[in-house]
Image (tube, rainbow, N blue to C red):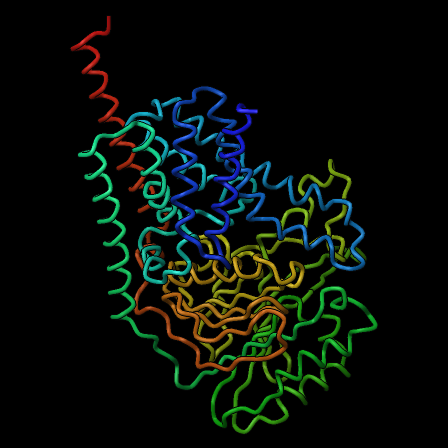
Length: 518
């Protein structure tokens, strides 16, 4: 029984850390989880370190991603049998990165040494970066997102990005556990905790100063209307509900406008199909509802669209798109989602894996990639569909640079779970990283207007059919350091950590040579 206590505590330390993420925001659990894990693992070597790291990661991802299984429980979904695999399979894979990071760190230096502590920070930082990039990447719940409730701390990502903040978070959170593991003396504890408190406060004070000196600035002639129709997922593609769904979308869209202003109506992911937008009766209904009461307004629709095209004469291709329309419903700009969801929108290696995607279509075709789009007189924008907002430094082109980000999504798959709140958090961090406002429209989920510093200016709660009007926020006056240099500052942090590891390792080696054991 005693042999099970350590693995159980390691698992629980990872599981508890998941509650640092939205919507809970209990950031002290980052310190409790990482410190307990480090204290329990520091004395281990070899594959035991890997297994401990894997178990820690499994607890963290199992609890943090439990909501993903809700997508398979939507009424009528034939893939409910996959639910146990969905809630356990992804955490099993994600935990491999944590296990590999811990194993590599222990190979470089004993974890009960300062060199080992530095190698732990570097290796976990690299592991987080790798899970965000390889095999299409899944950078969900990176450790830095635990600071989501502190907008002052969020400001640091404008310089070092979320990967840099995550690496610092590992250093801060694991330090107490490391000091306990090495039985550090009073002087070492005092100096270490002073360094922790100082660096934390520097980050917080810098962020507070950035927010104080950068109030939200709004366009005075452009209004964005975010539309959240709140259509139940089981009804979304029912042919019997097509008219009802369209009317739900148009009820919010048809609200009165302030005369003389330009309006951009943001409709959520796959709000309509291109078949519907090509139907003359439907087009008449949309034109009457959206543009019929314009009083000197210029109104545009930026909508998520299920788009199709033909390859050859009869092979249909489907795209998850965002299309801008003018008042005649003429397409002005089309963006096709490029970063598709594995197993949700396509099956990797489908010629080997005999499954259909777990949606109502035969699978989507990826688009060509990131674009800066124009629907003049609207400012140029970067179009992102659904979880494309997850990927740091992959949400806006450097040139030509957009002035805002449009993110359409549908979190109705996941119910009123942590998922939609965590998804919204990614949009907040991308806004602060890039210095660009993000306008987020969800079928249901949490629709929001976010300024370029991560302030949520307007929000439509989960499960509410409504709309929100707000003047379009202006972007930060110039590109942030992170927008210009990407993960270079993160790599610089890793470089400093690795240098510290090497210096400590060399010092230990010199001491051994000067005073040989035995």
